[in-house]
Amino acid sequence: MLDWRKALETLDGAYSDATMRAYHCDVQAYVTWCADARFEPFPASAAQVCAFLEAEGKRMAPSTVRRRLYAIRKIHRLLSLPDPTYDEAINLAYRRVRRAKPVRPQQARGLTASHLKRFLAVQPKTPWGMRNTAMLSFGYELMTRRSELVALRDEDITLRGDGTLRVLIRRSKADQEGQGRVACTSVDTAQRVLDWQAWRGPSTEWLFCPIYQERPIDRSLSDTAVKTVVKTAAKQAGYPAEDVRAFSGHSMRVGAAQDLLRKGFDTAAIMRAGGWKSVNVLARYLEYAEQNVWEA
Image 1 (cartoon, one colour):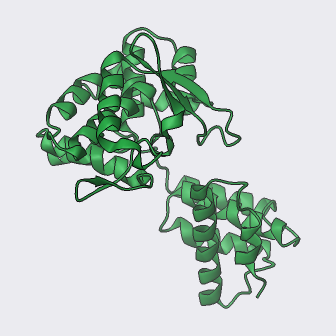
Image 2 (cartoon, one colour):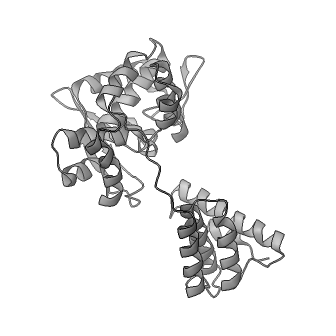
Image 3 (cartoon, one colour):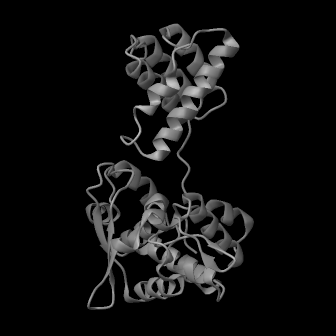
């Protein structure tokens, strides 16, 4: 069998860690299916890929099936093999998958300012509570993705003369080349971050780090830790279980965008503030704000 893992290694540094994990997962799923069906995975025929997509479509979301297809395409290119993925039969197979399982994208519950106030009020007077208070405030005001939030370092923030912080968000899902965007915090949020930094000390350059036995650990938090902080805060604030499930690590970004819309900011201004490149993605967040579905 051709070594697809070695082929993927050539992508290191060109794509984010999350993208690389997805490529490995998707190609492995295809290779495993081929082994069960007694097919050689590479090079693949159009009929073989069609059969795989249709099989995956019975158990996976259409977005995952599409991602699998892109991974198969990438491996064929990396291995300099004839690429079967543009065959019209494959296009039709994927269309059948989408029509058979129409899925409306899931929407994280927006962590709006009213929710944030409740979340902050229940944070304990401990190092963990100090860190989480700063993280929740930062994530909301900067409208960060969770990967952006945990990637921040001390060198990315600057205290301004008015007591606010200037923050450089260096790289994001929509900015793979790292041109970055600049955002600013309120005085209150700046003070929360400064208080956290004062406790944490100079032992790490990561702005938000893990804590073990009341000592900061010199590494960044995982992006899943952001989701845990949000859900734990929701639970501590007394939200019912279904609401806790609806909050996610993306909720701060969603809620801040919804609040800006309610305050009268237009879509272009919100896109600039949050670093969105697609108005379609932002529109899904804002429709709930317009309908007041997620009001506290």
